[in-house]
Amino acid sequence: MPLLASFFAVFLATTLPTAGFPQQLDSWQSDLSPIPSANWNYDTAAHLLERAGFGGTPAQIQTLAEMGAAQAVAYLVRFDASTNSHLSAFDHSGIHDPGLEPFPPSRPATTNLARETGEALGIKVKPTGNRRLQPVVNKFFYWLRASRLETERVAYWWANRMVSSETPLQEKMALFWHGHYAVNEGKVRDYRKLLNELELFHAMGTGSFRDLML
Image (cartoon, rainbow, N blue to C red):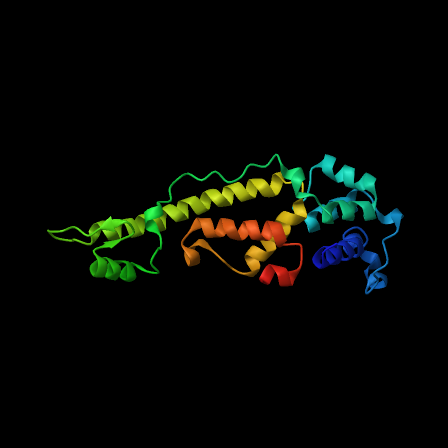
């Protein structure tokens, strides 16, 4: 089992009772022994799903409660991503234009490129007349807005995935790493890069931290 997954198995199994039995907290400090089967019930199963995911339906909670603590933790930690075959991949709207590549870091950089080469973002500078660079500037701000709108679609898609996934810990950790590295569309200006990040976190978010970084 990957190192992080092993950590989660121990962490979740040894912190489950804190919600249902607060009077015993002192005696459980630094205790990594498995929780007694008598302490495992519907409430602690619900607590587990809240810690390892985003909660669950009554039926999902009952299923975990019937498994027993060790099996429930193993079920959540040693997941098989193939069980998510019912989830749809993100449906790109086609709003991205290949002519935008490579996208300049700023509006001034875009207009400077257009002045120097006569073209930027796949748009040629007007040969004559006023505001010769305006079509290029329009394309620059078009993509800023378009990427932002597509990022909102990504957010709705991911939120639906979180609540529909059969592997909630995978989603919880993807959300954790996404927040840890504080990446947002305003920094990268390309919703596709955010999707690539999510793909990385889904694939490696519960594995080796070293592998994730490299």
